[in-house]
Amino acid sequence: MMDIDTTKNKKVEDKLNSFIGRNSKVILAIGIVLVVIIIALCIAVATIQNTANSRFNAVAGLESQYNTILQMDPESAEYTENTVSFTASAEELIASAGLDSYPGAKAMYLLADLAYRDQDYQTAADYYEQIAQAQSETYLAPLCLMNEAACYENLQDNATALDLYRTVVDTYGEDGAYAPKAMFSIGRIYDAQGETALAQAEFETLTGLYLVPENGGAPSEYARMAEAYLINYAD
Image (cartoon, rainbow, N blue to C red):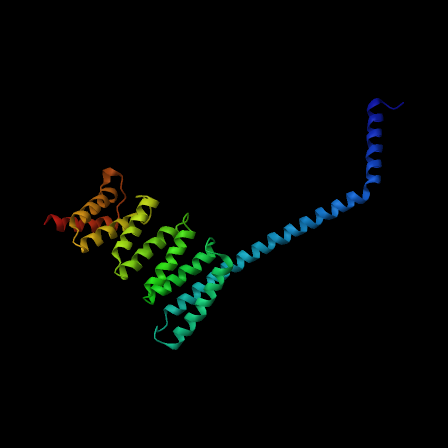
């Protein structure tokens, strides 16, 4: 005699077989769909990975081109030809990758550096600004703001340069990697403009943060340069 559990299991098995028999086509269709979805996902992941790899390879290629250009005579036809080719490749990568990605941002950064080298400071400043906005949460933002400020100094627009240096400190903090240089630059500009009181205040803040041991400040070359300015003021 079958026990109760065996009987129940037999009934469940019969019901399951009956269900499968009645719905075999539907079950088969669902299985096919799942297989197709899995294959599609695998292809998508592989495509994304291949695209990412190709973009990083493109960045490496651009860096190589850029370094080659730096060795050329800026007045030569070879320089012009290579610059045109480099710019086209960089713009293509920017368009495909976008500035919110590292490859796209790096491509524009190289364009900005080249423009700066060619003393096209406004173009360089515009490039740096776009990168800073798109990469506001990465190290590229404060770096590009510093470079943008340098561009405006070269354009004799010290007001904009001061705003940018101050933005670096206010946005990324006094303990940010570029804060000492930004603060020194602010003081340096004020000093050059004859705003001695403002310059002195900035240099004192800088030395207090990055030169005085009891304040926990880490020594900084910019704090030491600021200290030299303060010594001159004392004289």
